[in-house]
Every structure is written in C-alpha cells, then in structure tokens.
Image: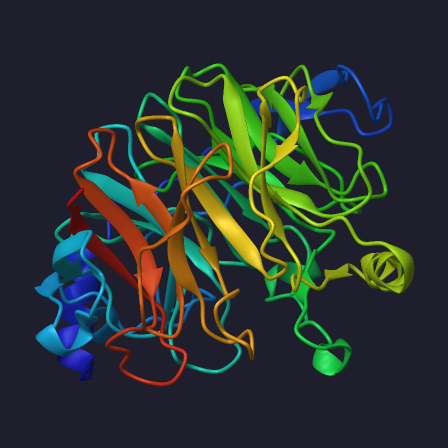
Length: 400
C-alpha cells in the first residue's frame, strides 16, 4: 500500500507508548533441577517503549494487504468432501500467519505472523474474529512462536528469542539435513497483556528451548516443551512459572500439547525413533534441530501417567486438539500423500478408532482449534493463497 494509507493504518492502531519495570517469577537457573519443583526468584525485565505494529519490527507486515478484515472464502476453495466446514471466512491474506488460538470468550485469536519481505521473522499478534483490531503483543524483536491466552483473557504467553541474537531474527536452520525444525536455545516463555505491554517471563535459560506452551481450561497448569533434560520432553508448571514437573521421559520428540476440555488429559505429538533413526535424531538434537517426518498422536493423563498412542499412520501427524466433547481429536497429517507434501485435517476418537478426513485439499491445513461450543473451527491453510506458501487463518462453521 502507499505511504499515506500505511501511515493512516498505523495511526489508527498505535496506542500510547509506555515504559515499565515489572517483575515476574523466573527460574533461578543455577538452582534448577531437571525433575520436581525448581527454585524461583523475582527477575526484573529490562523494558523498552511499548508500541504496536511499528515500522521497525522484525515481522515486516504490510497492514492493508495482510489484515484487510475477514472475507468469505471463494467457492473455488471449498473442496469436495469438506462436509464439516461451512461458511468459511478468511481472516488474513498475505505473508505467513499460523498457530491461531482462541481467547477464553472465543471472540479473539492470538497468532504468529510475518510479512513477505526477506529477513523477517514471526512476531505475536491478536485480532478479533472479524479479522480486525490487529495488535502486536510481543516485542518488536527476535523470533516468536506458540502464544496462548490465560483463562482471565487479559494475559497472553508466548515463546520468544528477543533477548538473544542481539534482538535479530535467529539464523535459519540448515536444510542440508532435509526438512528440519529449529529448536532455538534462546527461546523462553514470556507474558504480555492484551495491549502488548510486556509483563515478565516464566522461564530463563539461554541454552534451553522452552516453547509450545498451552494452558489447562481449569486455569491451574501450563504444559510446555523443553530441552532441559537433554531430550525434547513435555513439562507442566503453575501459571506463575513455579512447580515445574516433567511429564515425559521417553526418547524422542514430545511436544505440541493441549489439555482436554476437563483438564484431565493432554494430547500431544511424539516420535519414537529407533536404530539409525534414533542416531539421526540425537545428532540433529545436538545441533538444535529436529526432523518432524514421523510423528504420531498420543494422549496421557495431565500428570504424565497412562500414556497411550492414538494414531499409527507412519507419517508426520501433529497439531492435535480435543473436540469439546472430549472424546475426539482433530489433527493435521500428511499420511495420505505419498510424497508427504500435503497436510490435511483428520478427526479420530481418542481410543484410535473412526479416523475421518476433514479437509481434502489446500496443500497445507493445520493448527485446528474449536470454539468451546463446538460450532466453529479456526484453522490455518494455504488455500486461496496470494503467493506460494502463503499460510492464512480461517474460521468456519462446524457441521456434524
């Protein structure tokens, strides 16, 4: 968009700037134990002026093009067989927009996104479900992922590297190993209010990957992924960052976890490599990388007991989320594509029965989340993309 329209857009969205020195409970890393409860101390954040969607941030987003407001998805992108999805609305239109998760009142989402310019990286934003009122929640620096609302609706957690790499985007992963995900050691979990004011941080260790955090509907625990054990495991902690407990200890990647509607169970993705695959997994992990080519969906009790494997698809299955009935799980998988390039959404009973395909095209469909009443589904997809690999956020009416 032109300079005038860009200036008008920014002037409408920018709040007053503010500065603050706030404290939050932060692990004392010198005293941390791998298992059990860690010792915590108050940590004072070094704050900078708070602003929203500035020109200087690392995301490089063109507001008018990427966030013009929700629009109905074209009929050409309603694919045959997608009987559960009706009246689909597209909320974003350019760049990369993903991991969109609903607020407790189901009226807003928090998500990560960046624009089309080179050398940009994801930052955390919120918007209302009409695709408007876009606000940056994270700082203007670093790379971010995995944001989630607190049950109160006025606080959002997210993982960020903004205190590492001089605030720049971290280096891209080495794809000579094949398709890999980076596990940046500078990732820690931070808190911000819904205006973008930075409140504090829940984890603090420059050598660990602490991310992929979500919160129980009961409002008592956070589940998150960490490399602090030397492997990629799931942990839980209280909402103030205390009482850290390790939930998984099996070799392989355990992550991307969500609680069931009653808070009694956790669904997650996991790999269990063996033989040569295990050696490759461990070699990549030493480099801060993981290859997500063989992941299955698992369920366990919220305390880490009674682990059981739900899918046996031999592919990359991830982004699981419980249906509000607590009996079914929706997730993304590439198992129906022999080349493993196309991801669709599937539904399965948590006992592993009745696998059903939900999406049938769109190249990439993932990160599904139901509203609490089960009447709407938020998901991310490449369908109706403005350019190659353009991932956008959609919301659809859910029909049984």
